[in-house]
Image 1 (cartoon, rainbow, N blue to C red):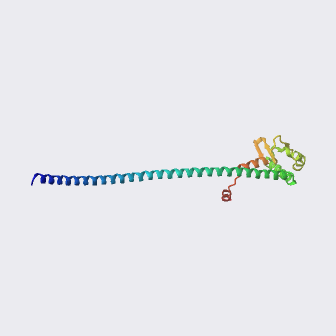
Image 2 (cartoon, rainbow, N blue to C red):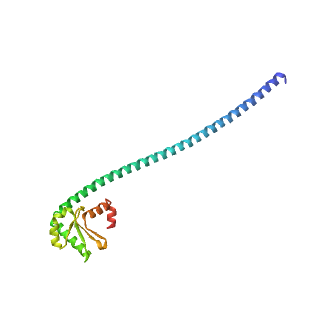
Image 3 (cartoon, rainbow, N blue to C red):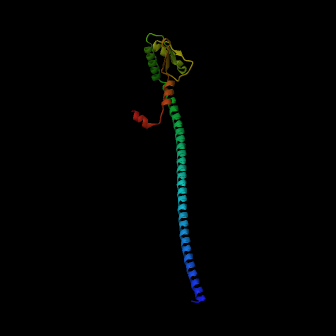
Length: 197
């Protein structure tokens, strides 16, 4: 083999080895790029999932907040309407009470209240007070019951009050007390009232 042939053979071997090395390197580079790409895709998918979960949670929180605000607004509106309705109801009650206080039945009621207070007092001294609006009924009631009545200096909407000082006892048949109790216990909750029946 002469020098040129040797040189050609050496050149062929070097080219072949270089081609194989380049092909191997290209192969390794391609595998490496695929792995980098796959890792990047996985990382992006994880980030997207985290962003989606975070945004979903934010939307859920915002929806719950809006729901709570709407519910609170509805409760406020309901409370306002109930207050208005309650005021209307008690205005009607006040009017019916005022109408009732002009009847003979009211005088009979006052007489019955006075007699009940006298029974409670038995033989003890009792001071019986009548509302200032009923001052015109004092003589008639004193005749019917045989007991002195005092016109109160404080209005209590009707009815009577009695004081047995020896027992430090107040007998309160006033409409004011009953109306206050009704206002305090007034409720629109039908479910509770039906359950208590």
